[in-house]
Length: 330
Image (cartoon, rainbow, N blue to C red; front, side, top):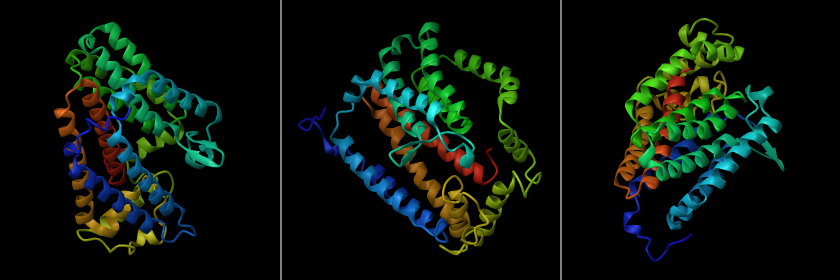
């Protein structure tokens, strides 16, 4: 499990570590600003505790021989799927957030899909590694599609289409990195186009409204399009240098709903302006670049694909959340 004798800290990516720490500090500061008018500072406390736990996890993972994870890739997959199955039966959050995506155990509420992301990436990296010479065989691909499709369908059922798209994206990226033939990518694209009518009629009303609001931002600015419009107003009002930390009008006067979660980039844009937004994007770029570099230099397929999976997960989240706040994504 632990391989301290052979563990070489000279390969520890200090730039990546510093980038992660800077992103964490940046996040805590912006959550502090977003919740400044709230009666509770719970969000800042949770984020701070999460950061500390994350740093401890980094230390643990540095000492851990990651091949140990590969030995348990099947139990990891089973636990990941069972968590999502539990959500299907006992999930909560539909009344508040529109999807039953959370579990509450002993007063502690969490979103199992976030844990499952990590588990599915580890599982797929090892499964593909064990079948890397047969990756383009139809039977092998069918197994991957079924095994990856089970958690995706469970998440889509919640319904949480955004998280399901995240899973689809990192699965495709991992397969592409493993050497998937372009013809299969073409087949997948064609299948996606053909299934669009089926997908459309399976959407909830609020999901269709998001698409309508994306196509016509001024369609319902006081209703379903209110959040997106207020986000664009906040970012636009920040201009180049921003209104100043803790000084955003849209943020501090609570015109911007969910500013402490999905729309936190709108707070960045309003209070820190274009300069602050670009600084954050630069940190994300460094994070992704260092991950890709590590994956490229990895000596085994399992390690490389695992890092590629995490990089893809970060990329789609960054793209989705920033794009959503500026009107480039749903």
